[in-house]
Image (cartoon, rainbow, N blue to C red):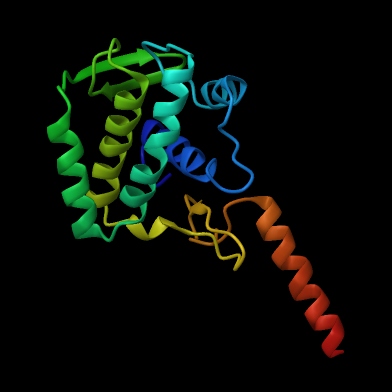
Length: 178
């Protein structure tokens, strides 16, 4: 494990959110938001309305910029996000997770909690100098983000779809040469 479980979960959620903007958009309905919240159960206030969905959709470019920023730029973006919120850090234990930090009160809007939780996860990324674990998918036709939490740093694709497409293309290229 490179990071704590909660940091890895938050990074996965942020990458999911960013990648939901790829074609086809997978965060366009309240049912899509339910998929997000089932996969990544955020605690606290959940409005589950059109305004919250619109705010989540609007958050995606900012998350993408934060996740892909070089280390020193990432620090500036992290500090900016921290300064924009009223922080109320508390240790919490819930849903089978051991003690971890909630930096924003549960009654704050979901988007604020998402950005601050992502920011706190990026603090760990910055401190460990591991920002290279977040990259753009190696598939030439994809702009999705790949999150590499593997021990050997081998993940290059955002999804199995992109990985399989490239494996098939490489296989066909080898067969054509033979």
